[in-house]
Length: 181
Image (cartoon, rainbow, N blue to C red; front, side):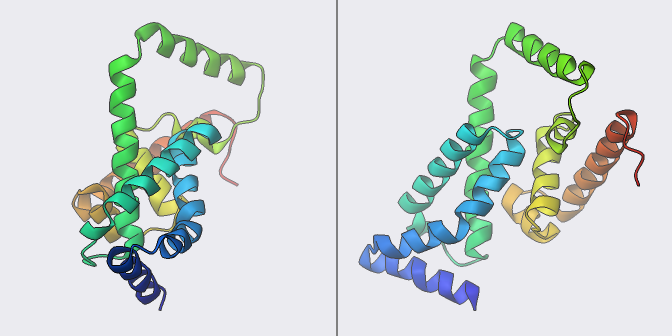
């Protein structure tokens, strides 16, 4: 039923340029998209809001390209995924080594002064693609098949990234005082 409602809203936007219909889609998915970005940006709320806004702008401007080959949410996550990786690419082009060293030193200092370990710290040890798979699967409850569609990777590759990411996070958390209980 939800998918039919999404399709009806998309049709209203495309055919009648109904911005209120798009507003309903934004209201329905904004929390999930923002949460996805919060996980990707280690809790940076302002950046997450900016990326989510960019995602919805791109979704609105390209909504006519939605072909209903997947759920609207899968299509939207694909846009969010692309927005995030575009952001990462621009950061890699502009970031210098000194800034990364300062960030790493700052993270180490926080751990050394005994700040409480959280999930964002554990996510930092993952490769970007592993972090994306973990975030979508465990935090957004997206199926492996849908993650494969979103990322453009085969389902087996998604499973491999999930497995590696879980192992890395488990080891990291164990090394930092979590005993698995």
